Picture 1 (cartoon, protein in one colour):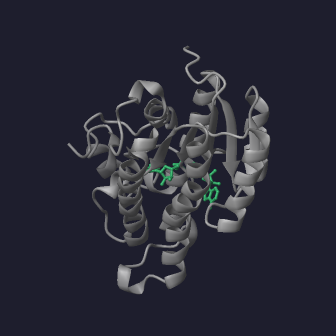
Picture 2: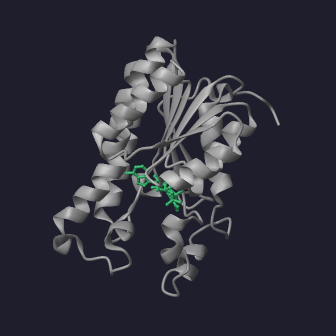
Length: 254
Ligand SMILES: NC(=O)c1ccc[n+]([C@@H]2O[C@H](COP(=O)([O-])OP(=O)(O)OC[C@H]3O[C@@H](n4cnc5c(N)ncnc54)[C@H](O)[C@@H]3O)[C@@H](O)[C@H]2O)c1
């Protein structure tokens, strides 16, 4: 495997599970010094312990103060940041803990706020720490986790859909604003991925077959499928890709 990230510092939020954990492994296998950042501190620490030169960071991206602490630690430890994968995220299902999803007019305000805080505000909080570090070190590459739902929707998913549409808009703004200073910003739009985030949905009798039928490739994505695409966007191989989204959805949107 190529060592294309040798000596580079790569931050992955939501790095302790699913797509983020796969991205941490891939960045590390290609030479990066990885920061496994997650609100699940023990899982982040366990993964960082398996990767050469990696460190973990206990962060809640929904909390601006927690993000500021993380970036001041990064500044002290490395003084630079080359790649960032803003991947931490939740859904309505996470907040409602398996309760049925209500229609939008019945959605508790708190559910709306929690999803937006993690999935949209969280990306903004991280950008506020990443951009100054990248400006100081002469550039960098940012990948934001969007979703199929940055482009289309499913009923009863208003907060997640709104947040992910917002992530795409934020991505495009950063690309336009900072491209002239060698900072690229792109989004990855995964389809339906077999991770803990999705277990309830993809294993449900109600949805599983219909979802599989909607995927031209006929299978759910693995976390590794998505991580490969995200890590590619963060690499110099994607050096002229800026402000784009990469659909890694098995062809659903086609
Ligand atoms: N799984 C899918 O089908 C799918 C599809 C499209 C997009 N995505 C996006 O991919 C990203 C990763 O999802 P996944 O499927 O790997 O989920 P996952 O649940 O396996 O992992 C998400 C990780 O993010 C962490 N996290 C959640 N909220 C956090 C917060 N506020 N601060 C810090 N860490 C936090 C969790 O602890 C967890 O380790 C998310 O942004 C998700 O919206 C996933």
